[in-house]
Amino acid sequence: EPEVTQTPSHQVTQMGQEVILRCVPISNHLYFYWYRQILGQKVEFLVSFYNNEISEKSEIFDDQFSVERPDGSNFTLKIRSTKLEDSAMYFCASVYGYSGNTIYFGEGSWLTVV
Amino acid sequence: ELKVEQNPLFLSMQEGKNYTIYCNYSTTSDRLYWYRQDPGKSLESLFVLLSNGAVKQEGRLMASLDTKARLSTLHITAAVHDLSATYFCAVVVETSGSRLTFGEGTQLTVNP
Image (cartoon, rainbow over the protein chains, first blue to last red):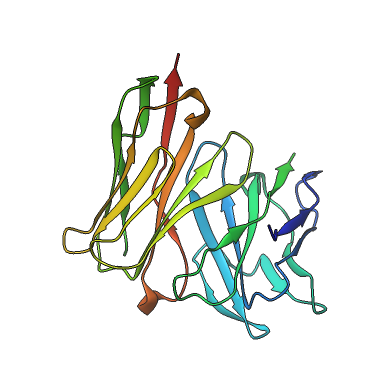
C-alpha cells in the first residue's frame, strides 16, 4: 500500500532553534496537510497545501510556521524559534482529491523542545 | 466553530463483548472519517462515510452515519484484545476547506 513518509521520526531541539520536518506524500496526491498532536490530546489541523500554495491554515499556524514544496516530492514544515509548547507529534497527510477519498497520514515526527 | 465530541473517552471492555462509540458534531458535514491510533503511532484510516445512512463494515468494526442527527457510531462486535487502541472520528465541512476536525478520541482497552 502506498504510504506517506516523514523524517525525522524524532527530533530534540533547544528552545529558540529552528526545525524542519520533512514529508514525502504519496506520489499522485494533490492535497497535503500538516497536523499536530500534543501528547495525550486530540489531533489538530495546522495547514493545507494545494497547487503550490497554502489553501487553508488554522489559528495555530502563525508566523512562526511555514510550509513549502521545494521540489516535486518533498513537503516541509519549518518551525522558527521553537518554544516548549511546540513539543508534539507532527503528522503529514495527503489525499488525491478531497471528495471522499482516504486521507493518508505519515508515521509522524516527534518534536521535543527543551 | 465546528465541534466534534466523542463518547465515551475511555472504554474498558471484556473480550467477546459488544460496544458502541459515539461521535457527535455540531454543523452539517460533508464527510466523516474514523481512524485508529496505536500508542506512539500514526493514524490508520478505518472508514470514510459520505452520505446519510452510510454503513461500512470491516471485520469486527462497523461504522454508520446519520447526517440528520449529526451522529456517527463505531460499533465493535465480539471485541478482541487486538482492537485495543484509540479511535478518533474526524469531520470535514467543505465550506471550511478540506481540514479534518477531530474528536478527542476514545481510548479502548479490551481485557482478556
